[in-house]
Length: 257
Image (cartoon, rainbow, N blue to C red):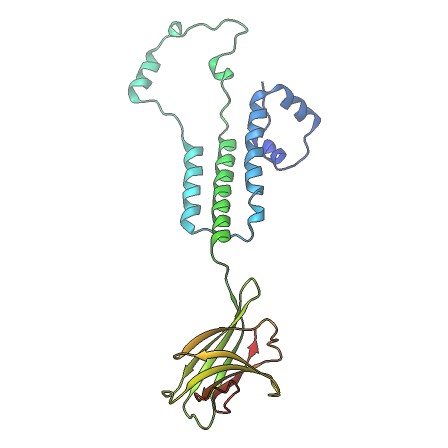
């Protein structure tokens, strides 16, 4: 019995319509039906990875291993040992058992060799495993924050030589943080505080005390950074007054990405 072309079976597995003669053949041929079922299963596994989100390209060594496996499966052939070849050459036709008329030989009753089909299955299965693995890694790894704005902080006349930077990041949940770095002389009595100020200086919000040269602060949800565009670091006395002291060390305007 002839069988459907392996490439044609692969196309049917991914959704191409089945011709009437092909459908009839599949109804009567267990070999092609099983091949098609294997391919359809592989396609289903591949499609199940679509919902995993963006997938990163695997390392080059992964592709090399897939290529090695595919080539190994397609090129493997049975070879006669030298002794077997000699025996075969001297064997007479009478040594071969007769086959009864109308009886299938073992070779024809066995499932036919399908090197191309095996290659397609190996490659598709390998790709599915890679996509599932990298998709799962993307789901399990911590979400990444993105930088949305930054500022260079310049010194005020009372603090010559001071300088700083500010970076605003936003995580996938929408939380925004401001990270500031300050290079200035040792602070005297009191402490340093980080502020957000509107461009016209009519409103100001304290983010908190800066301990050391660097700190990260959460931006309140009700603060619009398009309005509060100035980042300010001030020197504050220990007087219990929560308002800005008026002694700014550095200040800069945010520029958005």
